[in-house]
Length: 410
Image (tube, rainbow, N blue to C red; front, top):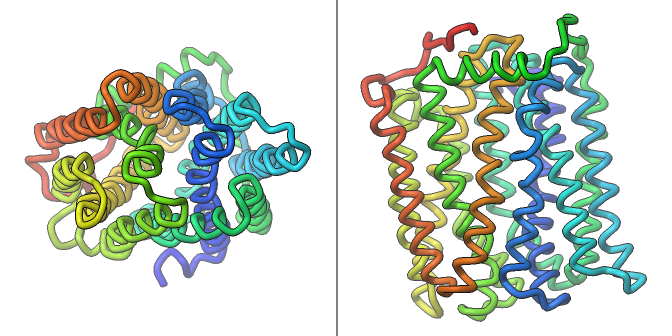
């Protein structure tokens, strides 16, 4: 069973599994609610993704330093409960006829802020539950959850939205966060408070920055994540509106299309570790980046009828590539960074990756309004492919494996 033989990691895995499925409802229902029920134009819909990811850009580095001072499980539980309350406010407001775009923006901004704390603490918490040699397996298990949610979630979300409506479907997402909090609460491994240290925020952030800057592999992984995330966010900010308006698909069909495309994520989650053993983790990293960029070129050719196959093929290979990138990039980061600095190192990579999202989302919405959605998809695809050069031209190309490569101490 690998990492799942560890009872506490199994509880973390169970918490993550349902929460990932619930988040797929959120990802589909919120932009559809804005685009259809509220009649928001494409630029305003893109603002939702901007608001969700803006906290990473503003507070990501600070949260990493704070998380290195705190008990991680408490942070995870508090973030889950807070997100459940925020998401539940949407169907309640809709019930009383008080829902508007401002409410949606406030909810996604608040949930995005809590997600910054959750994501950084979660990635830092995993090495405290499993030994270093089990990190690739543990991360592969968690990425398989993401893959299963990516496969089952869009279709399930589309059916729930079709049956219950956009607002009511979000109540299911709120329950998924409470499920996550319940299983996290049952973890028995002591959640020890980190050793006290002088609290100089800028110096603490600087220590993490020096670790990333001094390690060329960590730096390459982080920069690739930031650049690819910027152009991917241009794509994601408009793609649901593109499928609904330009291609003319109903909610259930958009969900089903997402399920069909993301089978690549499930395949990657189940095979990533074996792929790394066969060709090496370093080769898997830069190879996945290249595959990810090449597959993205098919998205702009999506259309009605057989042209939908472009979306399906692109989705399979891009989702496969991104899961492989996540498994090996995350495992290297967790193993290489000094334990006392892991929260800050995680926050730096998260800030670069997620901080690029609001900028890309704004540009995607503005470009789509000025030049059309299909043109914007072409620009985004070209940018994702160009970002692969960061890893292909990094020291990774001279390595087979990542074992034994450590980041320097500040």
